Amino acid sequence: MQQSRQDCTAYIRKRESDRKYYKAHTEKEFKRVRKWQKEHPENCRLSQHRRRARLNGKGDYTIDELYGQFEQQEGFCFYCGELLYSSFDNVIHVDHKIPVSRGGSNTIENIVISCASCNLKKGTKTPEEFLQSQTLKKG
Image (cartoon, rainbow, N blue to C red):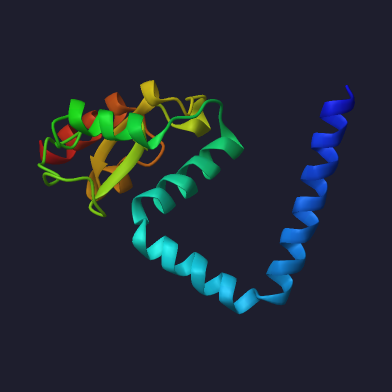
């Protein structure tokens, strides 16, 4: 019990120290964070995606699992089969098969990689509803 109280106190002191440093060096920290974001765009997209989904759904996944999903799909869009490129880059979208707004989870089992066009058209439809709507438009 005593150790956890000491850990908690040390944590609180560290946070206070970090806040003071940030307040004193706001511009420097802002530049450091922006530089990191430019160097790691995939981590930033994942972080934003996970935050939105965490606010609405249950579950989580790692960037390694996301890379695994990309490899499992062999670099193709889950919906239209378009080749997304041989590497994981800005062209891909991370999509929930069953939308979080309709009870889907934020686990890797509910995540697919899609092209921007399919993901933006799909919206809150299930894969079946989306593919059916695409078939009706073509026919």
